[in-house]
Image (cartoon, rainbow, N blue to C red; front, side, top):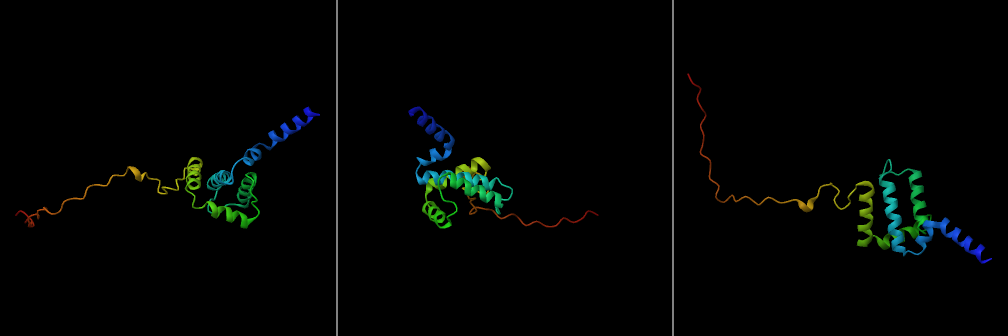
Length: 140
């Protein structure tokens, strides 16, 4: 009897995989994981600015796999608002998006401005005026 129960529980744990590990995570960690996966899916899809129905369904599935009720719009909006100003959430999801799609939300132009040097301002106080030139006359 104990062996049968142990085998049954082991099978349930193995088959539930991702859902079981997400069960032990905090809401914030689950939200970060789901959002990271969803962003990667959306921004590597054919049309990120207008995701297809199939992509939208996959996004809902991702959030559901992380233990959220993705069909409850009001609850999802509440959870999103809860973490929208959380720097850890922003940084982690931005790093995930950059890793999977190359999109750097912290630097959308794609240039590394942290290493950009600004040329020193020229000192124009001692600028000499160039002498006036006259037009050359054609040779005869």
